[in-house]
Image 1: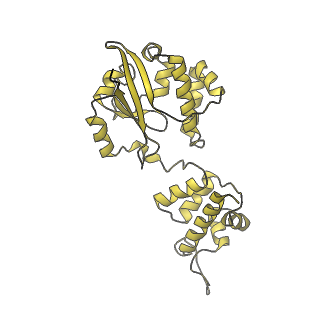
Image 2 (image 1 turned 180 degrees about the horizontal axis):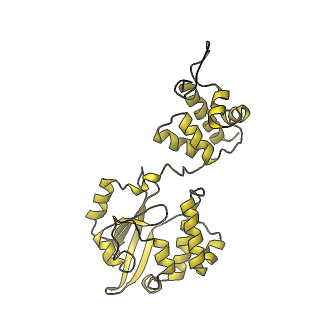
Image 3 (image 1 turned 30 degrees about the vertical axis):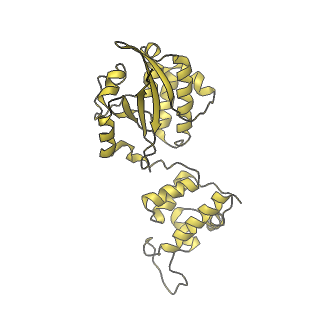
Length: 263
């Protein structure tokens, strides 16, 4: 059996044994050989069959849904780290576990503000949720005019694909657009159960035939850094080396830095 199935089963079994019926809200009567939940009790609480619980604990090739993982995490009273580990073992993205992406760590904000080169932070939808003055000065048609603390956040995909200035601003716009959409598809795979993600993709289909063409190509690539060339409206041609970092405790965020290329 695959190792991840074995680890998932062992993790659930271990935490089932740690939760008492009283902690899970069950009444008990008579003597029990073990203090933890029985398999049939866990099955009842998460709305599954005892057989299904047995199979997953035995490491069989069963595929728990995100809803089932959410119920298991609640009943087993997992911590945030334990919940994330459970979803990782099951090969699923927690649709609620990264809701913290709207809460930007103050230390991360300080890092962004202190950079003297364009630096911005993207959320899972590729909204810019924080940026510094250098980024606002560079991305005049994208970030200028927005308040980073406001409800409406400028979206990178919408800018690249829909804003008329993007074709002039981004050198080799078509190739970069293909790459960006393929990178975005890689991210979407983590959030297939997110209604907001689905809504945004449908909206892009409605607004951009080019997006539909690129999306239909089914290209998937990891986000990478490298040389980025722009035609700035007042500074002319500028060249940067892009670097993207994932904050350890906020993996739905992407910290993007554009470092000047020395000639």
